[in-house]
Amino acid sequence: MEHTNTRRSFLRGSSAALLSSGAVLLLAGHDAGAAGHADVGNDVGILNVALGLEHQGINAYTLGAQSGLLQKPVLDIALQFQADHKAHRDLLIGAIEKMGGKAVEEKPLDVYAKALNAHTLKNQEDILRLALSLELGATNAYLGVIPAFKDRGLAGIAGRLAADEVAHWAVLNHALGLPLPKPMLFGS
Image 1 (cartoon, rainbow, N blue to C red):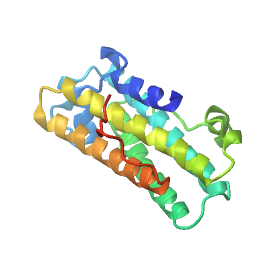
Image 2 (cartoon, rainbow, N blue to C red):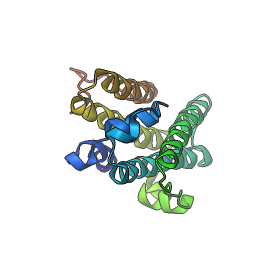
Image 3 (cartoon, rainbow, N blue to C red):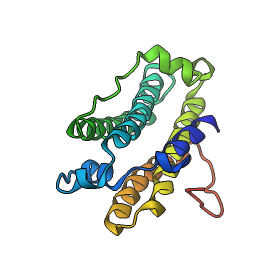
C-alpha cells in the first residue's frame, strides 16, 4: 500500500535513510557522545522526514476525529493514538533543535487530506483501514532499522518504538475484526 511504502522507505529505502546512532541517542534523551557519532546534516534531514510523517499521522487522526464517522470508543482510541504521535513529534523536534537544525513545519490540514485521499473515507471502517496502513508502515520502518545498529542498546530503542506502533496496529486490526496474519511477520 502507498502509505506503508512511504514509511518503510523512510528507514529502509537506502543506507542514507538509516537513522544514525547519534540521532537515536538524541531521541532517547542522551546528549553525551551523540554528536561524535552523527553526520548532523544528514541526521537532521532524516529526522525531518520522520517529523513530516508524524505530522501526517497526527493529521490523519485529526481527519478521522473531525469526520463524525468514528463512534465512541473508537474515537477515544484514535485521539489517544494521535496523542502518542504528538509525543513522537515533540521528541523529533527536540532532537532536531538539539542538533542545530530547523524542524519541518506542519502543513495545513487540507494538504494532508488531499495526500491521504480523505474524500474517499466514507465510514468508520475506511478511517480505520487508513490508520492501520499508516501504523503498519511505521512498524516496518522502525523494525527495518534495527539490523543497522552495532550497539544493542540502540537496537533496543528502535525495538521499543516499533512495539508502540505494533500496539497501535493490533488495536486497529482488532477494531476492524480482522484476523491476525499467519504467520505474524512485521518488518517485511
